[in-house]
Image 1: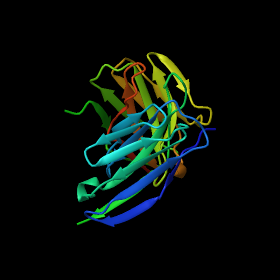
Image 2 (image 1 turned 120 degrees about the horizontal axis):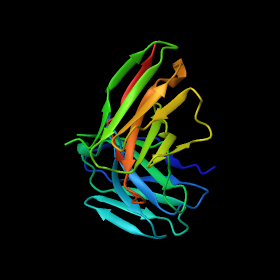
Image 3 (image 1 turned 90 degrees about the vertical axis):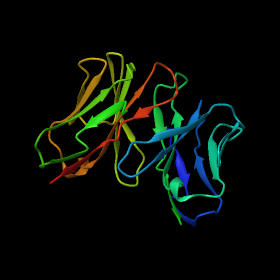
Image 4 (image 1 turned 45 degrees about the vertical axis):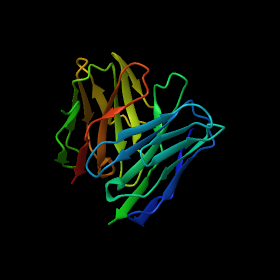
Length: 112
Length: 112
């Protein structure tokens, strides 16, 4: 069974601080995605990483895929209250990418 | 404009009373998914349709059924809801083997 773990489970920081959240597994994934989910809404895709060691940047967010394609990190620089939400990572479960297994998420609160 | 629409946003049902949740999409995507998300947990895949082909996860209870009468609509039927079925139910779509999932806003189900 492919399982994804995310840490920390909860994170509360002040506006302007930097943070890193992690997504780890003992399994190899063909690709990995990061989503942000706001209360009462569905998840929204932020990024997909495919190649081991890949780094992608989305404004103040930096995503990295581990060399072995088993783990990933999300770094936010100068966090803002608008970054508040549940950050979910999801791994493609098979080579066809048909199904995704989700981690439990990191709930981030950025206080003004 | 909303592309994946779930109705209702909030649903209250009684223990054992059948309930149907609906999902429609304007994206003409051929793949549709139903996920169950309980508080502070990862979204859990219940089943998905690839075109008309239905794929049931092995651990999805028999109490949960799904219908997809056409490309645009998909329904989740819970035949005899139990207290443990209270959760957010998320519908998602996808085009072919593209990696992006488009989620609806979800239906929050309460069971009294």
